[in-house]
Length: 284
Image (spheres, rainbow, N blue to C red):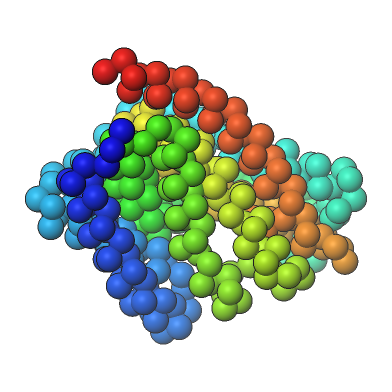
């Protein structure tokens, strides 16, 4: 299918606002010390695009959809992270568990009398609930743009493969300035390696997120998936992992193991998406 003038105009306006507001968000990072303004900037770009195009805000996908899709979006990132880190620990790329981090948790939670594993379980429950919910504002800001506006707009003239890859790559590239300037990433691997592995990871999970965005008809699956991915990797598994000389090559969103596991999930959902959405479009 060819891109329509309507979609071309919408995507062009969105791109212009995204670039302009990116600089504002980037400037605010240094003023606030947090990435939230930058994450919200792309969401604002999407909202402005919708308003300028005189579209209904409901077009961004505020419907909840079937709850099973929300639950899947919560548990898939947890399962992905668990598979990745069990592999990392089993193969000796890093160790389980970081005693210093656990002792800090005991102090922070005021649970000094608890055993290590009791505190780890408690920390998991806090991560899975309270920490998860606290990430909502910033994540929602991003997802209003990437899966709220971009994915359905691309799906008007692209197949599922193109929608997944383009939305994933743009989401990855959007992080590149942060990585290049050392505001995001790790210090133990070359910059080129970080950019490549991060792009593979982000683009891979974008396939799953695009699938559930189109399947559910709303952005909440993407919001939940994004929140779940962030908290379980960054707030649970990473702090509990004992770093080794080469662990940065294999752990977190810039490591080979999570990226490899994400590719497996991407292939599964890419096949599902092609069958369900591409065939549906051909039948119309």
